[in-house]
Length: 129
Image (cartoon, rainbow, N blue to C red; front, side, top):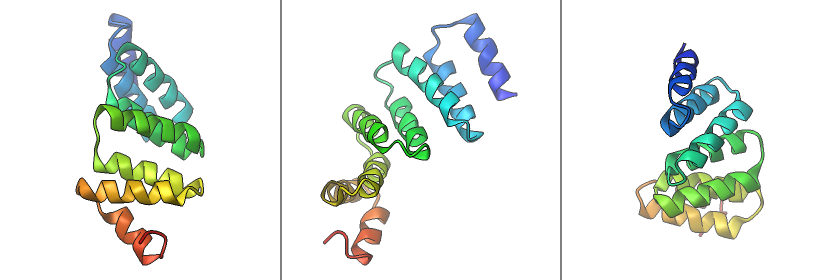
């Protein structure tokens, strides 16, 4: 039903970036990552400073194992609004991409911002010092 409501909101105002963002989130919640990405693309086109749209699109790319694109989106989200969770998710994408040095850097930065779970995990595994 939420998607139907967002469809109607977009019909009424096709330049409503928030409606596209919200519809993207609804598709993401349903596991429809490609549709979510399409909506985040449009939200970002209409509002290029929406850090959360970049972050959520990064999550969708991660779910599709498109790590390079995920890292790009997390990086843009960090430029716009640095948050520990974003550093943490980018760090995970780096680790999965076998870029441990960058992953550790992000794990430390995430911890500085209050999100220490990734750093603790990687220290336990001997990945980060």
